[in-house]
Image (tube, rainbow, N blue to C red; front, side, top):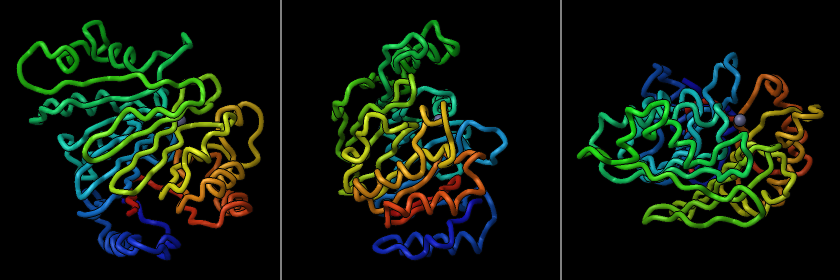
Length: 318
Ligand SMILES: [Zn+2]
């Protein structure tokens, strides 16, 4: 079980309930089943706070958004997401949408595990799967990605009923490509419970999106992996309650790492310009661990809001 950072217990508004929950969890570190969000309100749960490494003790990137005790949206499904989803007590039948920031393995590897696991549930409602379009042969678009996994010619063709719906029963997966080039904001998903917007971001040559989830007046922005070259994040994240940023490199990083990821000082400037209520640093990697105080210092040069270093299973009330 992961514990919340001690300094998280100074947050205003509903974060008071978060702190109470954190303290209760700290007192009962029994393991599975302890990492629960509140029954009411909007909560962000970190299913995986790590990156692609297998020696960091953390799951791959995956973020679950709760509304009044129901898991509504899942952003990315990195390694370990299906186990974390189970540990979180989430019900897959409540889930309306899975959205990918990009199709790197560390952000998508557990997608099939979740879909296969859902076979044993009574879900009937369609599941929308959103992710980047692609104009590069190195990466499939999201619809092709899902087809290549569970389509009739896919690696897991035995799961094709989720797409073809030829057999009776079950539910249907509806993959949709979202433009990952240009600067235009995509605003084509909404339901009675939530709204999702996306904007293309620059992650070297990888088609990548940032996502903004609006639920009951709260907004959570997940940057995906990005280097801020397009300089769109501050506008996209404007006044968000939480900005969940990939913190994959240290300030001292040079060269290719900076083509892939934003530095702490860049994240600080974005959080300041966007005027977000809290900046949650996730996608933490070994090259950033042990440097938290320096990272915080670089961010605080621009941003004076709440800075949180995420760990698996932590749940933040909005
Ligand atoms: Zn990544």
